[in-house]
Structure formats: C-alpha cells, structure tokens
Amino acid sequence: MSPIATGVSPSQNGTADLNRGEQVVDLAVASQNQGQALADVPALDLFSLAGKAVIVTGGARGLGLCIGTALLEAKCGHVYCCDVLPEPNVEEWARAKQAAKKYGGSISYTQLDITNVDAVNSTFEKIYDESEYEVSGLLAAAGIQQMVPSLEYPAADFRRIMDVNVAGTFFTIQAAARQMVKHKIAGSIAIIASMSGSIANKGLTCLAYNTSKAALLQMCRSAAAEWGQHRIRVNTLSPGYIRTAMTDQLLEVRPDLEEEWLRGSMLNRLSTPDEFRGPVLFLLSKASSFTTGADLIVDGGHTAY
Image 1: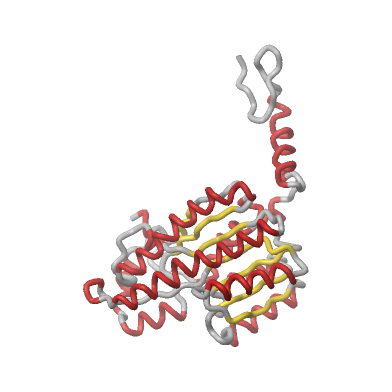
Image 2 (image 1 turned 60 degrees about the vertical axis):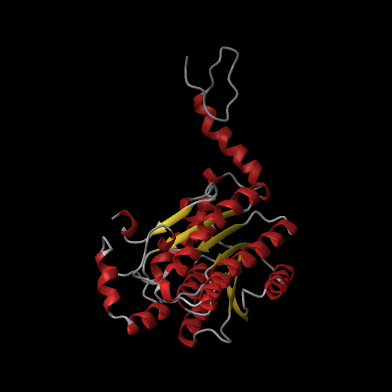
C-alpha cells in the first residue's frame, strides 16, 4: 500500500494521490489563516511586516531599539517603542527615524513602567484602538540585571528583578494578547529571555537573574498553549552575552568577566545587538507561522559546550 499524504483524503483502496498533497495541505493552511497560501508567497516576503505594526518594550536603546529599527527595514508600518526611560537614546533614535523615513514606516516612543499593570493595559489599549495598522506583534525586550552574590542578595533587589523581568513581562504579553483577541488578530509575541535560563550561569549575575529568565521560558510555553486557540503564537529568544550599554556597565565593574564569557563561546566573542535582528524578525513574521511555545537559542554555542 502506498503511503497516505497528510491532509489528503484516501481513495476507496486506502491510497491517496501524493501529487495533490502539497496543494491540498497548503490550501488548508491558507483557509485557517484566512490569507494567501504560504507556498504562493516568495521566500523573502515571508519576513515582510508590510501593513503591520509592532510594540517593542525596552525600546529606548540597545537590543530593543536595534530590533525596532530592523522591523522598520522589514517594511513594518509602525513601531511603538516603550520603555521606563524618559526619552530614547538620541543617536540610536536618530538612526531609527532615518530607517522609518527610508522604508516608509513610522516610529513613536512612550514612557512606560511595565511593572505598572494599569499603565500597561491603558497604553496597549490606546495603541490598538488608534493604530492605522494591524498591531500583530509584540517584542517583550524590557528587563534588568544585577550582579550580586546570592548569599548576599538583598530581598528588595531580588523582588525587583522578579517584578520587572517576570511580572512586568507577563503584564505586557497579557495586555497584548487581550487586544489581539479583542481585535481578532492572529498575532505573534516574542519574549527576550536568555541562555541564562537554561544553564548555571554564575558569570553574568546572581541566582535572581537566572531564575527570572528560566521563568520566562515556562511562561512562554504556558501562554502559547492557552492562546493558540486565538491564533496567537508565543516564543522566546534566548541570546548569549550581548555587548550593550548595560553589559558595558557591568564589565566596567568586573573587567575579568569578559575573559570568562569568551571561554564559554564557541565563536570566542560576544554578540552585538544587530545579530538578533534576523531571529526576532523570523519570530514576528509569517516565516514562523508554525512556531509557538519554542525557545530559539542564539548564544554562539555557549549552551552546547
């Protein structure tokens, strides 16, 4: 008996026409997505965000704003950056504005403390209600780190890490998911986690940071399982060590850490924020249409050592 093609009804003799399998399956996917069959979309267009809008938390500088700029380069109609800082970094914001002008999009900034659940809900509701584009994506990149030996870690500081990295992240993905359901949007949520959530990483910071990042991995899986029925995908991106303003401050205090970090990298170097543009674009676009509840590790091979 011939193998039965997925998505094709077998004939009376128990076989199926494999030549029709690809077409039937793809048409079924197109029907579920209420859009064009993916096989008819040119490969590079799978990564396009034309006609879409994305919210980026932690978007005042560094990784968040770098990726926000990349989203504009992918033809995103509007990138809504939010962060606790009063204003975004001047130089990085100027580059983002140039990208918006060059690629026909726009970018805006809102000061937002993600631990303030009422502020998060009201800010997101306003964005979704007023945006001229479908707000199909959220990049949850806001987070903090602190280097303190765990035996000496003050309770207030531990709670602060968990409040921002875990509770604050949940408030943002919850607010986005509520609006996606309300507006009937098949959306994608990408959470910036860390390889520190998967390893015993004493070199970056203490137990609190590692614990908070591990919690994000489980949060992603649970949210993905619950929100899949609403056509909302949830994934995490776990970077390795990144050269940012935040890590530069840490290395000023502990310059010996850089050598330790390099020993753990198969590529023998730290990453830069621009190296995460592609992975996040994949997660927020239809290129990853069947990816949810997953953790995409981009760490220079650190966790594989």
